[in-house]
Length: 325
Image: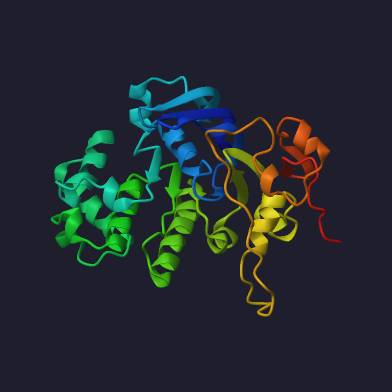
């Protein structure tokens, strides 16, 4: 299977009044074509920063200190802005978490969809309009012709989310980055939207980098899972081994905090402590202050690198959780 995306040792920092925020600290991952790769972790752990870095959309106060992001054999960190713009919206698209904020408030929905089409193709106005309406209909929006003439403020949050999906998918990208794509949708619409994402993979052979904190979505969608904590990738595995044999203490604790239908009497075990201070972060493992498996190595050595503990299962931990028998 060919490679869709490869990230090597990516470091990103932000300047802020409180100091330098160490948002990503040497993140590396590899995604294959036709694969759904889920990134999970707490809010503020660096998931969205990674997505923005891939898209070349980091804000002005961000700095890429090092690392490579390969798409179609080209390092996007070294590519010029014109090349990035030629990919964005065509070969690589993104569904943003806050759809209402991502849409242009003073431009009709139809114009925003057609702009993407005209930017990357020589399609006629009539055909572009037809394609835009077809894509809105595929996203479950009733009366797409009427929606084309409306402004974002006239739509509900869920409808804006589906419009954002339509803009991202209208040109059938090879890589879709979806940052909480089902936020603001009810359970029924969420299931429909996730099925459309599966269809994109099944019918177009596209790859999806899915960012979420919903482990139910991860279990139903992912081929592979990466767990991020404190700007570092702490565990990477196929989805079934990760749920059955989570080995990083953070991943294990994350799964223990979820309610289970097959064990209704089990007490939910919340993860104690607070997320790491991304400004005053040391060189040790970021999970150390909250870790129930910490040993002397964790306190005196630099944060561990990802190491393969089982075939295809990588963990960044000096004392991983012992897998069940």
